[in-house]
Length: 214
Figure (cartoon, rainbow, N blue to C red):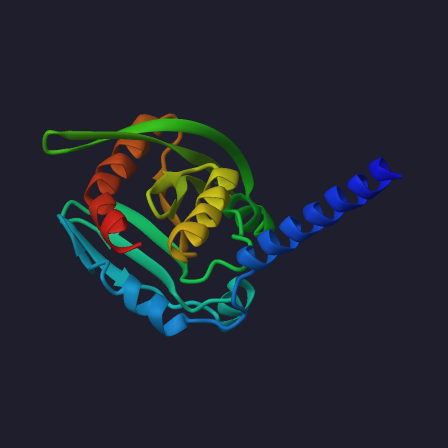
């Protein structure tokens, strides 16, 4: 009888702990787009030698992503290099991020995704982190895309690690912010190294703003 009571007590304690964890990890259903948009405004239109131009988005995109805190911007240089930047930010990360490969595939593009580690240099400082790489093929050519997540101190392409980071941040300091950062450029057949170098150089200029703002 004592063993049965002990088992019931253990089960009750486990249920209580589970309920507490679920309650702590619940995200506020109220959107805070105003705060999220203000945060994104700290990412400037001019990043190093790159000059940005905001592109319009259909209202359905905001509805699907459940936030208006989105950057949808084309950056060019005087030498006509071009990189597209997309940032989706949730001040309260209550929804799942939409993986870029799913969006590209939904538009009928053939995609190949791999994971890789890149190294960025900023002055004497060096930083390496994991990203997801997508090569998208369409009728008129190919694009090379890098994407990664940012949550607190975490920067990387692993979705599960990003979610764990958000959970830890919520417990530690009630911070549930999370962002998806995507950069892409056109890629000529057989010239992937040039496209990789272009994205890497742009990311070296962008990363300080990502670290400070998101």
